[in-house]
Amino acid sequence: MSRQQTPLLILALAVVLLLLSSFSAPASANIMGIDFASDAMKVALVRAGTPMEIVTNFQSKRKTPTCLTFYRGERLYGSDANALMARKPELTFCKAFRMLGRRADHPAVKQLLEEQYFPYEVYTNESTGLLTFKQEEVQYTAEEIIAMIMQHAQEIATSFGDDKKVKDCVITVPSYFTQHERSAVYTAAEIANLNVLSLVEENTAAALHYGIDRVAEDKSNTVLFYNMGAGSTQVSIVTYSAYTTKEGFSSKNKTVGQFEVVGKGWDEKLGGFDFDIALAELLADRFNAAWAKKKSYKGEDLRAHSRPMTRLRQLANQVKEVLSANAEFPVKADQLHAYVDLNTKVTRGEFEQACSALLARVTGPITRALANANMT
Image (tube, rainbow, N blue to C red; front, top):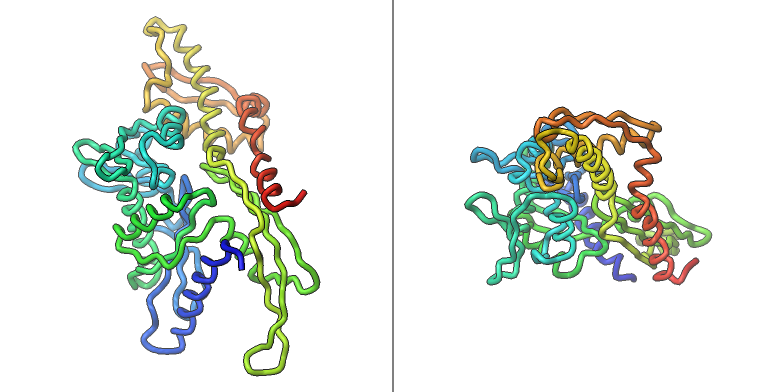
């Protein structure tokens, strides 16, 4: 048995126990799955006698932004927090999942603050060694921020699941998470008063989903899973096979499928969000050129101002999606900064040129995963 398969056995055991409980009364508690990603999360729910469902949130959507805003004494989550990001970037916390178990001087944290223009004030608490956000007069650790988002996920699942409070959960984590970072996920869940049955790697969960109804009876089959999310790129190479066993107490043979993760590779600094940043840099250069023609210009750079750069990040994401189906797209942002408008046009070729360094890295995780698996 491979080390990667072990969490899946715990997950399978939890589901089996829950299904068995449907034959007895009272029914067991529901089990929640949280698929955490850099930008958004999805919540799944398994109830006694009911197939697993990807639940809808309070806006009737299955994907919820992993954002949290502290505004006027309230906590806003998901789309509500996302809507305030451009106006209140210093009060809106995103990407906190990437900061779990890390210090303020970690390269991923420095990239977030210095290269991706998030205006957070962070430091490392020397007594605990934990990264801490300063929000006005209050300090929060990354674990506490994620715990609040986990509680929001719990509220979504509870509301969807006939108001039966969900306490047990399974959470996905990236392949590159260290043991220290995985421990931080457990800490966040403990703060949220959730019981973690297992942590499952994202690609391993995808491999399980792919193979659960495919049984390779004649020969083994190898599949490469390529997963570029918002914050990172992960590749897993998985071999599917089968073995024959007796079914229950009968003499009838049964074919059982199995799989093993034989190779992994990743680039934790290459994701869709990095393409947004590359396009935002292009737009910032064009705004600076237009700004330089104004009398109010004093040799400044738009990148020094967090609010307009936050607007550009969000605008870049929209432009990126449009350029996936169109050769060019006009980009406008009224009074982006200093009463100066951004009015330009971006072609797909210009976007690809701006992202050329990123595009050169997209196959790197494949090469490393193949080498890890001793395959070509």
